[in-house]
Length: 217
Image 1 (cartoon, one colour):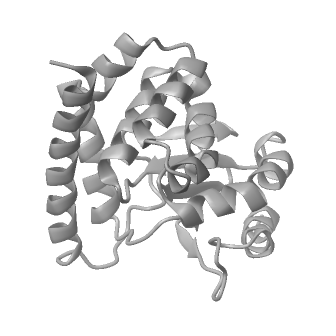
Image 2 (cartoon, rainbow, N blue to C red):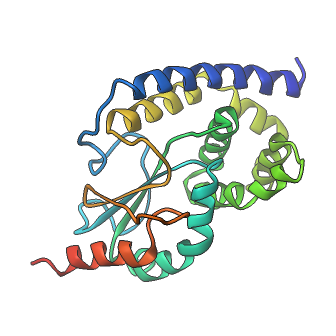
């Protein structure tokens, strides 16, 4: 089986997962869970039990997520993550094309915890390539190679049954928590929304919520 065929097979499985998740979304109301620890969490900054936890649900194929990263990530990381003022938790919620998003997240995890965020951010920042006609598969392999993975390792990673199962479970957990779009941000379990913003919550709104929590006794 060629690499292209293997990738296509994974794509079909991911598409089936997406259909199931879409069906679930119509049955699931907004509920708790977005602020609680979840299996598969990837985190930076302060350790568990921190006074303030910021949870982001996002997808590597989400244009708004990429815009938020481009506009806010460096400032947010410098102000709150690098200083250990908050525990930043990233949760995967694949969006269309779901097969690309699932594969991207699996590659990030296969690259290891120390390179996970680099892979995620590099895929997001490469979205313009797809609009220019580059095959997303080529982007994923390029980013994976840059993280130290060989093509053979990447192919094994994106078709790993256990990895696909875990990705499905994380997506279902996000849906069950009531998350309906990306990016979605929660500060100590409370969703932060900036009406009219084209790139998710503004840094101003996030800072206001975070600083209020940090100021509590």
